[in-house]
Length: 389
Image 1 (cartoon, rainbow, N blue to C red):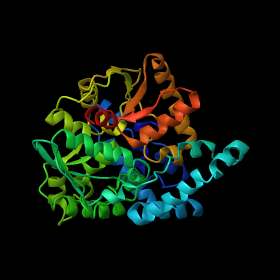
Image 2 (image 1 turned 45 degrees about the vertical axis):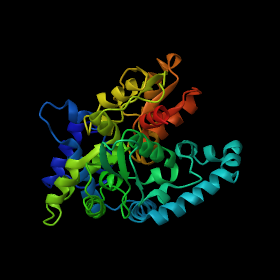
Image 3 (image 1 turned 180 degrees about the vertical axis):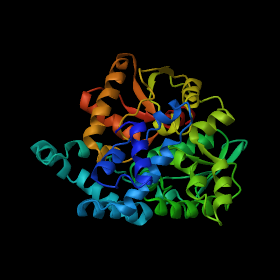
């Protein structure tokens, strides 16, 4: 019942009124990673991802989760991710916990392990000293001859824990002749909401982003997060029955590009320096499976001098999957174990692990730390930024 066919069977049974939306059904649907590996392997072209998202929407509407879960989910999806101000405030609290000595003390005393949250604590990204919110609303002119004009989606967690990655993305684009706009008024893309069953909330965020990003004359709408990009490219599905936004959603989707997809499309300028390192490239599921982008990141890495090492099962999920590593932590850690076995098989020849999604970066860093591997985990655009700076 945890296989794709098994889940589809259960969804059909619920749809026909032969199975209730109860504990068993919710458990099997919740356990799905949403990695879409089954979708690309399906000879019939079944859109499994859309089936699961709609099933989760039905669960949110008709199933009562435990009170604590409802409160946490309501606060996270309904408030934190919908307000950059609240997200910033919560991030500051986490930053205080990380830097006040409290986190270190709790780790050394073993209290986090006794509470059963040591793995979750390890997965928490380090909060930045300076947030990226200050850059929203700005325009960055192209270096040299202008080759394009794009709007950049800053994301959610990127603003408070990966601001360096956002700045690296902007610089990599600018140095390759792209004028970068970061439109004011943009919001979370809604990916986490859609995957968790909060489709109405996801639709609200989609409508806002469509209005903001289509207000300017941009060649492309660029993101550096595979999860965000796959959801942005599904706005037409989210809003297919919206008489006002259905057409605009299709126009929006036509412009969305992952940053690696866009840079590979326009072609890189000659880099200022070569990054002559052997790197392991890990395919994010929502880049390789959802967006069918596999060769472009590898081409970019090779263009700046990297030797790209392939690992067994490179396109298998690392276990991050949005908030799966929090909601299904035990299963996520087992999946990560398998991924680290694959990375370990070629780790001796590599200097770092490279991917193209922040969720994967968080997960792989935790796995590397747990295994004692001295392999930094970076995003493709961080190496591009280094090569063009």
